[in-house]
Image 1 (tube, rainbow, N blue to C red):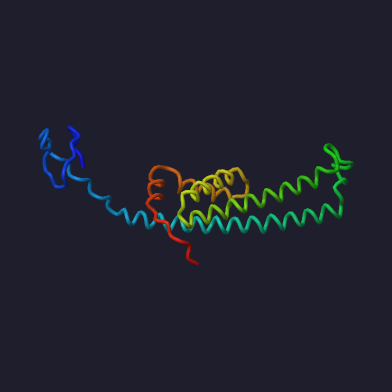
Image 2 (cartoon, one colour; image 1 turned 30 degrees about the vertical axis):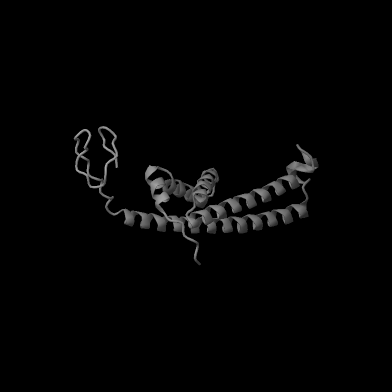
Length: 176
């Protein structure tokens, strides 16, 4: 502890500074109910992590089922029928290329969501960062569940109070 007037190092329990005579300020009392706040916040973060993992798995299942249906539908009717007949405007490679791109996007979204959930459940700093990135990307996505999950994630992780509470959480291994 140091004197607020002259900066001299003070011994614990010393009532006044021996150099300038200024009274030593009493130590700040701990925040009342801080343990309760941290425990409540920890349960919210754990629930959020579970939701991110469930959202990632659901995203994978729905996306792959949809892509399988689309691949079967388009292979039966062909990529060159309808308004895109003859490869208009990009050529016959465009349809299959878009299908492969969407499958890759589904896998990236799934891995990002599961990594966010895992990191939040581990209470790691990288998990907080990955969850915020996933939340920003999900706000741009139309389905309401992903948008709602993104908004709730940002509300729970952004801000000075929530940052302080997140750093107070102790890292604990995941127990199933």
